[in-house]
Length: 393
Ligand SMILES: [Mg+2]
Image (cartoon, protein in one colour):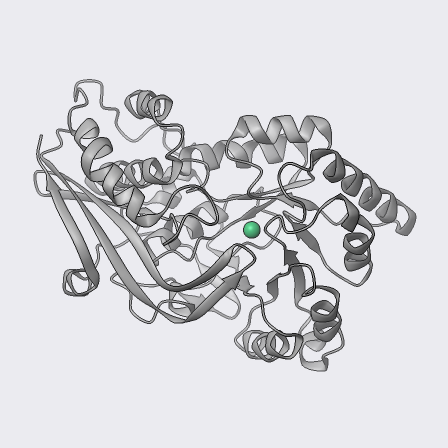
């Protein structure tokens, strides 16, 4: 499939309300969007890097520049003879050798490269009239919805949790950091509305704790947390091993399945997950396609989790409807046994150029249309654009 042009936009979508995590507060969603063209067929990709380089070293504006000046010109210059079809149907594999070379050149740009991978896949799937779900080989038609709650006071978190369980959500992932942890969990656990809903409460610290906090973290599990996501900074591998061991022992005494210690920021690739799993420093992985360079690597990580008996959850990045469509298809793979960050983008975006996911009775409908997602509303895309470039071969 010959590429005739590429475009990249830097858009700013207004947030419904600011979102706070221990790595910073986001008030508008700046996002880089890629389009690849082959004649009349278009493929769209979203770069999920956050507005500022807080969660990882990539930022939306930095990725926009890199895509415009280096990555998209390189993609347009790739030899088309070796351009593959859609990979093997039902396996999600993409023998995308050209992109592998780019990945080796720019190992520091997984989110920018994930946008290109998504656009290439969307272009090919759209050309073939196939859906991403079909490409990945998923069979589930719906997946449980989950939602992430930003840092807030205990009362603030409870108020939000009540309205979310009323909307049908049965998994709440609550952001914590030192000083905003046990009191928040206790408030949720002692609230009748939240308890009656049967909602599962996972905690995500974005690496805010250290080796001296292991007792506190174990106590959070005793108090009813159903998963601890990236509790420790990524450098504290020994402490992570000790935490996993203590939670395994706690579960063995109670005759239950251990509460997983889920690695998020610590895993940028399948190789990272293997290293940490071999050391016993994780018992689950939050799989974010953007963080690991795209859907292909995310699929490989999922398969590794299945093979190693690790818990897996599909992680979100406050994407637009485009990135959300990709995440919903991925999350329908059978190894995702922890409910992921699966909610419609309309929960945080006050305006979105893409159609949103459907939430029905606490479940997300897995998209089955051709491509990764339906095409965007160009009027809305233009209205939110703060910069744009067209690249020709
Ligand atoms: Mg996380």
